[in-house]
Image 1 (cartoon, one colour):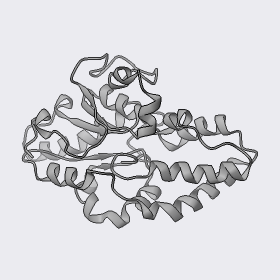
Image 2 (cartoon, helix red, strand yellow):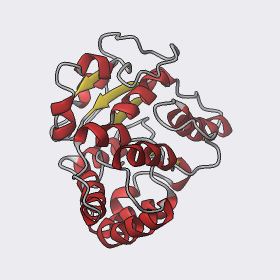
Image 3 (tube, rainbow, N blue to C red):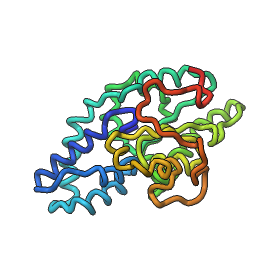
Length: 250
């Protein structure tokens, strides 16, 4: 969701930079930010603070960060192409939508309440958030659990109706983060990677490694990783998405 559906990544950066500058620290570089994207809050926090070395207790940092985010998250806007993409996917026959985001419930509400029609594409039962108790501790992205759980919410309803379940290889994951791409690949799903322009800059020359789900160094050898051609693609925008490439009726 963050940086894929909504323009939150620059907001996250701006909020953190306000606090960093308050204590004489440099702005957050994309080499560090890339490691934070897509990860659950506790894991991202460890990476951030190991780099930032702020001279304040973490609870104080969190309170400052939460106040800034509460101010700016309600201003989020959809990224280019997203309204049409969701509208098209929602109307496609025999297609099921689920949301899998590392964003926790509080922030999810702040970011999405003013986008009710947009997020109505995802039934509440098919929304998996970062603080979902069904995701074991330490199993956020790049682990595949969040995507497998999202698929299970769909399949559980299909089983109740006596309908054929969806297999992982029939799923298409949309991601902007490197850990998220790996999570999708490790879940055995196809992936569309649409990164922030600054992330793409620092990944130049490593695109195939990212698409193979091998860029974070945590690959466990399951799913459909390892570089199979066609299992993941890179797009720089979701405007004019090629639905036919994936057998989706637009």
